[in-house]
Image 1 (cartoon, helix red, strand yellow):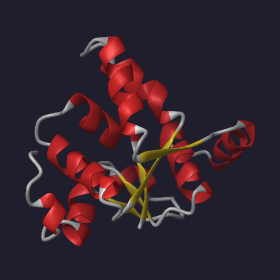
Image 2 (image 1 turned 180 degrees about the vertical axis):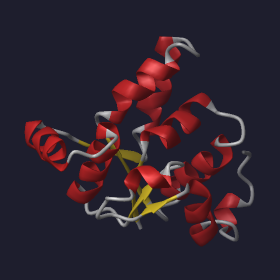
Image 3 (image 1 turned 30 degrees about the horizontal axis):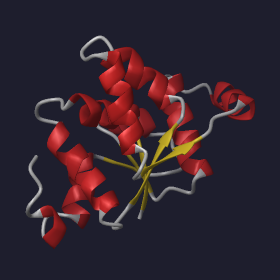
Length: 147
């Protein structure tokens, strides 16, 4: 299954947000086990860094992001994508760019905690808990993961 992670899920993972990090960690574990293919929009990393560098050391955050790229693929966003999203006039431009990235990589789902933000998306949106529930709770590789 190919999954495009929304910025909020990336922030949950990188900043270990209480209440949200466990499912994000499980998604990365599933990717490390080869059970899912994770993607993120290149644009999301500027938001992750903006938010994250206020909470943790920026150098450490960059190191953590770099290590995650072993299992996380990055989709480029270009001028054509920006123009297409501007023409669509979504209420949340950033969500439109994430949805555009999901279309580009032919994702099966966008993984987000903001399902309403993707109501207009051609790619269905699922919460991290939904995806983990579909793929992971009985997976032998996830039983030993600390979350």
